[in-house]
Length: 443
Image (cartoon, rainbow, N blue to C red; front, side, top):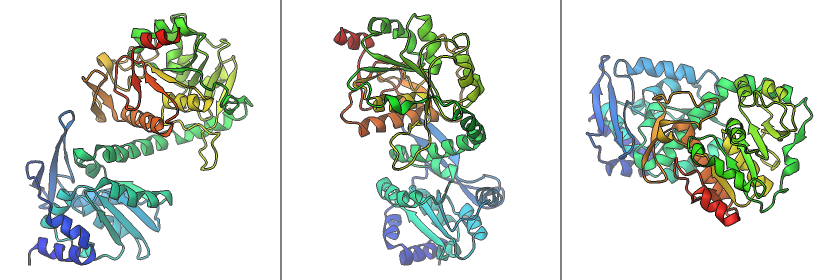
C-alpha cells in the first residue's frame, strides 16, 4: 500500500468529511512545488499571487526540515498547557515534534486552511503514527468561516495558541481576511513581548498622576462633528483648510500631527499619545506649556507625560468584558482616538491624514518627527488599493489598523464616518470626499 493510501485510510476512518474534501482537492503543482531537501526529506515552495501582492516561501527548511521542526517546537512549548492550538499543519514535521513534548493528557488542535498542502503531506510522508495519535485533533477545511467558528471558542478559553508562520504565508489569496488575522496575531504577540515591561513601568508611574479620566468626556459631544487628524503624508494637502472650521468642530489630533497643525496656525481641541517610548517627547518638545488638553494612554511614556504642563486626561487601557469605560486602542494612536471620538458621541467622525499607506512614497506629513525618515522595503510590506484605484505600498501594521477601523465602523452603524484624507488607502464603510467639500457643507 502506498504512503498516500495508508494515510488516506486513517483520514477516512477518523475524519470522513475531511476525507471527501481531500479526494476532491486537486494540487496545482505550479503553485505548490515539491522539493527534496539536502537531508533527503521533502519541503514545498509555495507561490502566491493575487495580482497585487506576489510571494514565494518554503513550508519547511530546504536543508533540514526535521532539525528546523525540533527547534520550532522547543521554542514554542517552553510552557506546557493542557490544550494547545496551532495554525499550520505543513508537511507535519513540527507537529510530530510538538507531540513528542506533550504528555498523554495534553491535546493538540491543528488548524489548516490549505487543503493542497495537506494533500501533499499525505502523499509525501508516512504520517500514520501522527494521524493515529489520540492527542491530535485535526481541523482541516477550505471554508474559512467553518475554521474560524471552530477556532474562536478555543481561543476564548485562553488556550495556548501557536502560529506556524510558513503555513500562514501559504494561506491561499482568496482567504486574505483570515490570513491577515493570523499574521496580525503574530505581529501583536511580538510587539507585546517587546514592550510589555516598559508599558508596565509607565503604568505604575502614570496612575500616580491623579489626572482627570477621559471617561468624564464620554457623551459630552453628542452629534458634534469630530475631525480626527492623523499624520499621514496626505495631511500636507489640506491641513490649512481646518482653520475655516476650528470653532464648528472638535479637532482631535494624534500627537505626531500636533506640530504640523500648530505651525499651520491650527489649534486642535485635544491631542493624544499612546506610545510607551520616551522618543514621543519630540512630539511636544517646545510646546510643553500649551493649554490644549492632552490625553494619554495609561501605558504611554511616563517621561513624555511628565513633561507636559497643560491640562491632561488619562485613558484606561485595561480591557474588561463588562467595562465600557476603557479605551480600545486598536494598536495605534489614530485607532485609540477613533474609539474616544465614538465614546464622546461625535457624529459625523471625519478622518484627515489617515493614509494607512505610503502615499507618494512617504509615510508621514511634513513637520512631524518622522518626515525625514526614508521609506524602507520591509519584510511585512504589502500592496493595497488606494482611494483612486492606484496601488500603494503599506505594511502589515498599517493594514491591521485599516481592518480595525473598518470593523469599528461596522459596529457603529448610527455614526457617519467620512474619509477626507484625499489620498492613501480606501477605507470601507466611509463616505470619501474632499475636506473642502465637507467644510462647505458646514458653513
